[in-house]
Length: 199
Image (cartoon, rainbow, N blue to C red):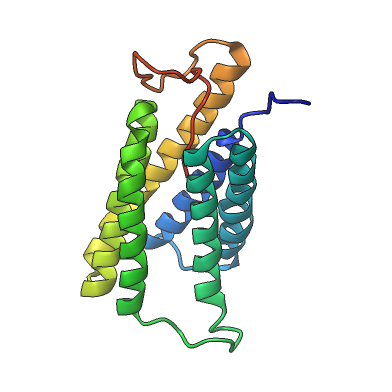
């Protein structure tokens, strides 16, 4: 029976990273929500991370499975929150309710961040930054502050770019069998250098 599976982390990281950058370009005020962001959220941010999470289950990686499946389903739930009212299947969600939704994801991400302390420094920065992003977005929705929303947008772009960088570093480092792009490996770490997980 085959037990040596490909590393699904780059797939999940790219799905998260690219979709996060696009959504937060909107949050920063560069363009409005459109089918492009919704499609990315459903397909690459959502489905790609769900696939990666199922693959992490096969690799016996509880953290990776929980992270990728949770954030993949986050994207699906966010897309549904936006499109169900357009289809007449649900009422629009008030900003205050969205604040609670984002706050709960921030609390979840805060605890997941604790689990990254055994992983590389880029991974730690991604989860720490994502925790801050969820709390900033919740603050925006509770307060109605456009300024907080823009700050969150720029911070989210940075988080997404970090995820893209880690995905590319993981692929290239694994492909060449050495560190091509540095990711700040802990000195004492049981996993191989190419292994990483994120959202």
